[in-house]
Image (cartoon, rainbow, N blue to C red; front, side, top):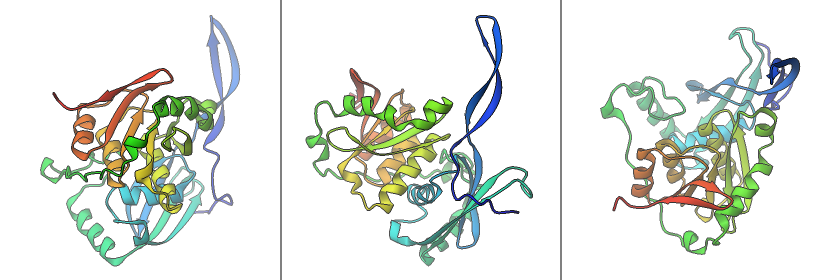
Length: 277
């Protein structure tokens, strides 16, 4: 395989399309989000191949490792190297992220590989049996952040997110995950073809920047699933805000983990999911 000269990709490619509007056809250029196979390799052994946008892969690998429970803290990762390859051998452009993790994490990962049939981004797919589902939840401690939240923080985040979605404007097909402060200002944002990947990239960058994740909230341009809430709870994020509807498991997961779940977030309002009563 030939390693590509570029260390990162733009996140989109240009393709010719036939556009039909009101019965009139024309051939125009369209921007399409990139989707590559990305192999995550731990201490020389491949653990998972994820489909994601081939950018910000170091942050993605750190976030994935934490939110999937492969490592307990960022310090458990000693080294990361990202390799981009062109098509020969696999048939399509692809990337590999090689991580060196502490021995205890690697031994635990090898045990997990014996029990699981290949995890995917949804976190539940690939499990051999219901009994192997890992539904034990971390409880997010009360650090006082939610009490300090500005009344218009969610509305402000809703207004600000679009300015951080450059790839979505170009392609119409990428999700965003943002980290906002108590005022609702967007501090960090990442985009990817997969909503789980976007969140992993965001969390990975927050770890690399040593940001206190208990003092902010996540804003997602997607629906919240069980896995997105679970990933947030793992790193002690106290609130998850999304623009679309939650699943029933996402709601119960948030309640058990002590995560405030807000959905249908718009500039003029939102829906907060409370207890079962």
